[in-house]
Image 1 (cartoon, rainbow, N blue to C red):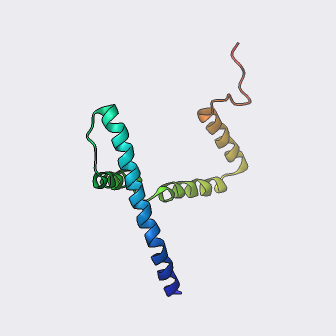
Image 2: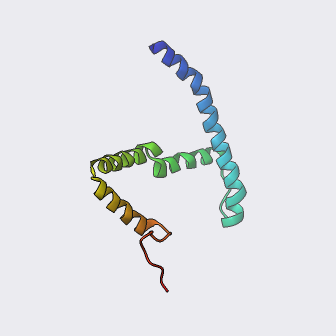
Image 3: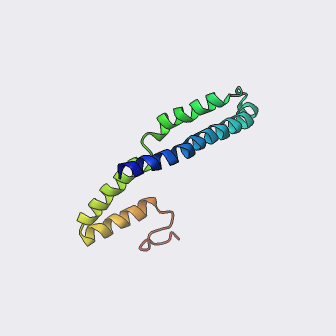
Length: 111
């Protein structure tokens, strides 16, 4: 069992390295195409572009998208399950009234 995981990891490793290399090249090409013309910034090398990718991942990416949003969704689902049907409907009405661009069904048009 352990051996199969190791073999799968070894098969995945070249694709991961290729993806990172290709992603660094795409960032470099986009930067060198847009940033000097738009903002007068300098052209970057491949290694600078790869460093930018890593920096952005550290600053903005953190643990990945599911790490943050999955926990929030799980907590909200637990809270919703504990609500009574009346509380759930009141919450839904408040949510629709606050965040929806469409007027709630019970509102009267202004004339």
